[in-house]
Length: 363
Image (cartoon, rainbow, N blue to C red; front, side, top):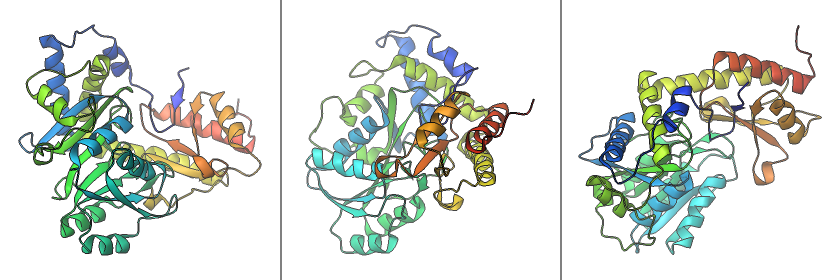
């Protein structure tokens, strides 16, 4: 029985992706590799129907955090003044990245899990002190889906460029690419796209990529990656097997109906988990309407520690996720990304009943 990963990446893979990863050995300096690279770049643009004349999908080796660091270090000018929206671990990570690279930044902070203060954002941007805004779309600390459409509209109204952490939302949530403020989106292969770890990407407007910004990094300078990829080359050794897997995953995403269908599927599965937990007296941490389709957080059941819950479910083939930092003793998280069948869900529902309520499996 294969383990089902219910953590927010990496995900359980389809058999097609699993086979594709090991399908062939490719040298990254041969034409066969560059055909693969071109197809993945185009496939990423096609996920949200982006025009290659206006947008570039830049592939880099690394985690989603690598994409975030590359995006911030490469696309924020040295004289920029940056406002960072924080309401979880990953918003705070954006601030840390900016500070490490010597970028002047200020945070608009809310408690973990609390909503972004849109009125305060409007007021700060209206004063004209900030050229850029860094924001997280899906804050997986708690599962909160920040109101990206409203954030992007405020940035557009006040002439601020928006750089987005969409690491846990790209491929399953709506992203307002039509807003002129949205300049770049960082993502990764091993979450909603259902690829493997080690491959990340930044989808950015070509006008933003064309800025003459002195490099802050050698191997994370997006302009170098984009320039080399545009002429069928690569500046450094890429994660070749990651591209093989993502090419297959993107084909599967398209066949399944695109990001909209994937979002519907995630919502269906998340709803099943939520109903089962509710029947067991386990409350959601946030209202469903404020949560991403990708992940939901739940209060720990009374009388169970996280380790007891985790280990009980793992014995039955399911891997869940703990809360982070100060929330570790208060909540657990279940993500419904990846290759999860209806049969898997039925087993999960029964496993939750057994571990939380002590129900014996019906024989």
